[in-house]
Amino acid sequence: MLKTIFHQNHVDNSAKMVDFAGWDMPINYPTGIIKEANFVRQDSGFFDVSHMGRVEIFGKDRESFIEKILPINLESLDIGSAKYTLLIDENQKILDDLIVYKYSDHFLLIINASNTKKDLDWINSQITGDTKIKNVTSETGMLAIQGPNVLEKLQTLSSSFNEVGRYKFKNISIEDNMIFVARTGYTGEDGVEIIFDNNCSKIIWEIMKKLEIPPCGLGARDLLRIEAGLHLYGHEINEYSNPVDIGLKRLLETKSQNYINHEYINDSDIENGNFSIAAFLVLDRGIPREENEVFYENNVIGKITSGTHSPTLKSSIAIGLIKRDFNIVNNKVRIKVRDKFLEAEIRKLPMYRRRRK
Amino acid sequence: MSEIPKSLKYSKDHEWINIEGNIATIGITQHAAESLGDIVYVDINSIDKELKQFDKFGEIESVKAVSDLYVPISGKVVETNQNLESNPEFVNDDCYDKGWIIKVQVNDSEELSNLLDATEYEKII
Image (tube, rainbow over all chains, first blue to last red):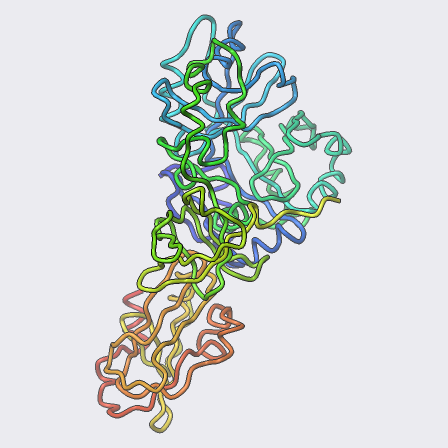
């Protein structure tokens, strides 16, 4: 099984380890998922996300290559900025959702661990002109540091943390090590994601300890992203998703004829999605799980894609894909969980939104 | 290493049982609680019912998983731990005391011989 640079730290901290896309990863520490999620909502926490794929794109023709493979409007992506986007192949299959970062001399893509091989195979198959692809996943470590007090804590290391705007990134020197810092995240809280050479990992772990930012597992990360209504590939998004149905039409922003799916994204057929993503607040006791059917009166109107128990909302919650006509806030539905039906109410997505400072 | 009190008996399904007089107190072991992770619901649908040894008496659900609960001895379910409705985390924090789940009026304590002692239980986890 693959191990991140922090693997021994997880084991030393008695984390419960699970196989995640071939990586041996911590699902939670002895603290438990709920307390770890509360740390992030109320103060701070960090996640080892070194398993996520990190791919650099160099070369003289890198701009036209990015324009060919991603549906972004390149003109609106400045150096030092990042964008959330989709990787869609020439058959209109959604291969992944990812974040693209623009440097002065290259692009960085951060992709899902479960899709790294598939994405790289396809990206490599599309290479044109002077374009070089470099997978730096195993040479670097990556942490997501999230929570309302994270920026304040990190500013005690360097005042430069204050200068990184939302969806911006810059290199910051910490104890003489250059570290990539992006103001992005996947929890619904403010915070940063950092990338650094493997040989900095010891210093970074010590800094987290010193700043009293506790390690949190992937279980808490999943809970937090469901509260924040964020998609996870393999759940809300898959190869055959219609971008309109899953609420991501806005990502198809390019007008470039150079984009591989230029015709597809400008075709009016793409508007005709029948489903949409819904958020559910569960009124009964029990957690809806992926694939559970959603009923309106006696008819199946869709399926659950993710479910959890929300300590923030003090109730079970879920996300699902249901027929658009029924996706009306306050509509009462029933979710079939094993042999019983749970009453639930449709809520506005996301169910958790942080208060801005 | 999880705690396995010597004074209790155990089922292969990771329930513990403690008999005083003709009343058995039943819960899940620390090993089971740790494997499930943070417990958020304990649902008992068998109050006042006569159950046979190893019948299902309820369900326990954590953030990540749900598991059936089996009664380790025959008898009538006479009480459930009401505190677990608002504090299901008692099962994670203190499974052998505050986190007990049901009490059963025992008919036949001979059935205890179908269960494991602490040493035997330790070998199966």
